[in-house]
Amino acid sequence: MATNSWSGELRKPVFVKVESLKPGTNGHTLLVKVVNSNMVLQKGRAVSPHAHNIRIAECVVGDDTGTILFTARNDQVDLVKPGTSVILRNAKIDMFKGTMRLAVDKWGRI
Image 1 (cartoon, rainbow, N blue to C red):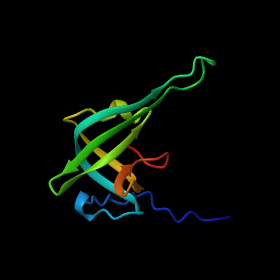
Image 2: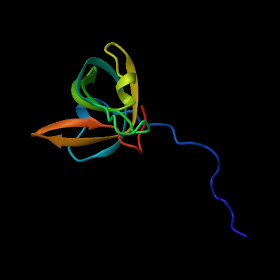
Image 3: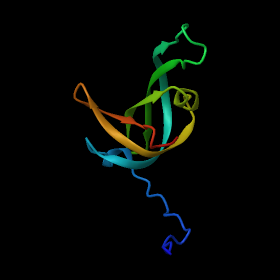
Image 4: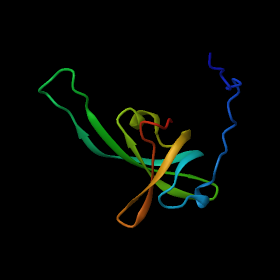
């Protein structure tokens, strides 16, 4: 019989600041405030009632060390309203047109 070595305790999150983010890295946990949010894509499919709408918003988020663009997708768009503070867990840095963008994929959470 196999023994389970998991003790049941979760690791405490290590929050990083915007200024310490580097291109091509992932697994970041940040506490940021949403400065503004701009819907850039909203598509719906009328073919199937079970199809999901596609929504993408570009948001400027930041802390006391700087700001960065955050790309919110689908349900994430509802959570990032200007003036709200959010915790981004397991966020990654994508490069787009020579600038860093923060994203939370299916493995992360807002």
